[in-house]
Amino acid sequence: MSWLAQIVAVASLNLRTVPQRLGSSAVAVVGIAGVVIVFVAVLSMAQGFYSALHDAGAPDRAIVIRSGSDSEMTSTLTGHEAEIVKQAPGLRRSGQRALASAELYVVVDLPKRSTLTSANVPMRGVEPETELVRNEARLMAGRMLQFGTNEIVAGRAAARQFVGLSVGSEVKSGQASWRVVGIFETGGTVGETELWCDARVLQGMYRRGNSYQSVLARLESPAAYGPFKDWLTSNPQLNVAVRPEIEYYTAQATSLTTIIRTLGFGVALLMGIGAVFGAILTMYTAVATRSREIATLRALGFNTTSVLISVLAESLGLALLGGTIGGLAAYVAFNGFQTSTINFQTFSQVAFAFAVTPSLLIQGLTYAVVMGFVGGLLPAVKAARLPIASALREL
Image (tube, rainbow, N blue to C red):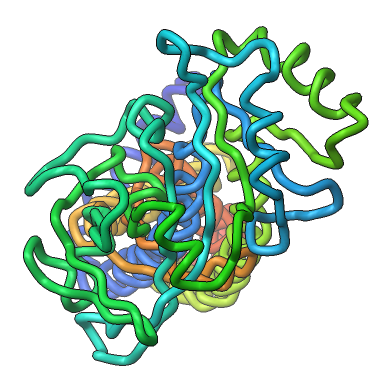
């Protein structure tokens, strides 16, 4: 019998006898499944947060802020500077209107629905052009705000996460009172956490004078970014930095996603060590209960390689089963789960949904296979080195 045929025969025998060791096998499967659930769940949180920010950017949009600022919160632009930005080449226009929105960014305290504790919710002062600049935004309920009034529209995620953001309700911030007239969605991006109001009204409420923090510009095409940036950064009347919107939001997402992913890998590693010990004990038990069977096969001419690979095949089979169960459980339990966290760049809440992607499921399954291989290696070596004579005496 060829070595390949021996491996297939012994591995098939091992797998068929797994139900006879159901208790010990279940320990390994459950342990690995638990590790995969935690691993995928934590990484799906990082993926959801990253997607909420990264997907907010469009390739034909750029954000203009004060040079040296790393976010809108630390930037200041005068009204005059905002008007100069709107004259830059490469801007998309609708008739005589430049598709650019000069904006303010402040935070207001609102209670979260889940805990009723206060959290910083971003309120963005926008201009009427914002509907054409952020062309992905769609009203889900109510209507668009009337500029020049104390009306706001709330993002879908903000309305779900925070109290008092239904159409017709009022939001109070300090001495100001705002009336919610609409709910909008932007495809699950960070914009859905925001409240939008008239920038000029917000200037008066917060005593900002004729100042803004950023200008969001929609370009004629992604290729127009170079001329647009060069014109603004070389203009002696301005001291601004220009960044593609995608790059701006990706930079904001990087720090927190790195922390979450590092935490996820660390927790998975620690839990994985426990799961590996469980797999080792399971496979040692399997080898001990099948020592006479293994010795008989060796006496009949089966080589050590076929025995070693057969034990590894059983360990990998249990790991694949545990990984599959864990991945499916993580997908059912966490995919699309809505939550919010702090964005350390703006010190405001970002609502997002956990995203269990195919890539994360593959990573979880790969990690399960690695645990199965490590857990089955030592028992497999022991089985291959099992003395034939002493094992046969047990018959």
